[in-house]
Image 1 (cartoon, rainbow, N blue to C red):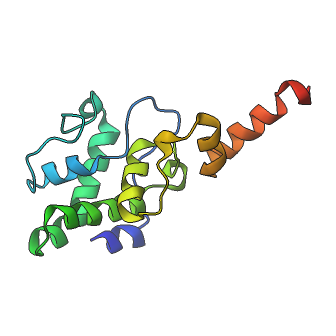
Image 2: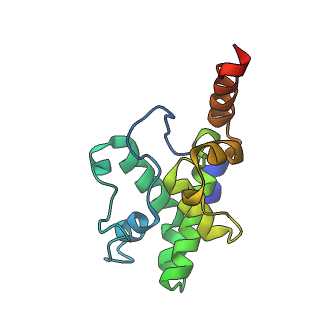
Amino acid sequence: MLKKFMDAGIRFDYCEYAVYPQIPCIQDVLYALQFSDRKDDRGYYCPEGAANWGEYISNLMLASAAVADELLTGRYDEAEAKKLIAETILELCPDEAKCLFNGEYVDAKKLVDANTSDVTKMSRDERLAACGCASCNKRAEHELLNSPGMR
């Protein structure tokens, strides 16, 4: 199903200026498909308050639909299912959502690529420099132009 979504140009809804989570948590996708009833490491199924936002729910359902056929008809343990969901989340993220300040994107990236550094241990400036997304590049350029030495 993911291939059909990708061929049709279907991606997550995403607004870089939103103040609420938009990219679904891996654990929420597992829960939506009734593959797991465990809560995530933070103690809930859905980021606090995100269930009240349409974009989060539509993205959660899109990710669930993209993996449902393979996940529910295949033989996956929970770790394999999480990796499949993480790969799907990375594919469905639009370019502007592929940002190291986007926690759910980073969580998915770490599951897929073990070489992904732990950005939670980076300073804001280190993360900004390492990211490379359009928003971070624009922010870094703006900060450079407005730094005391450039005025």
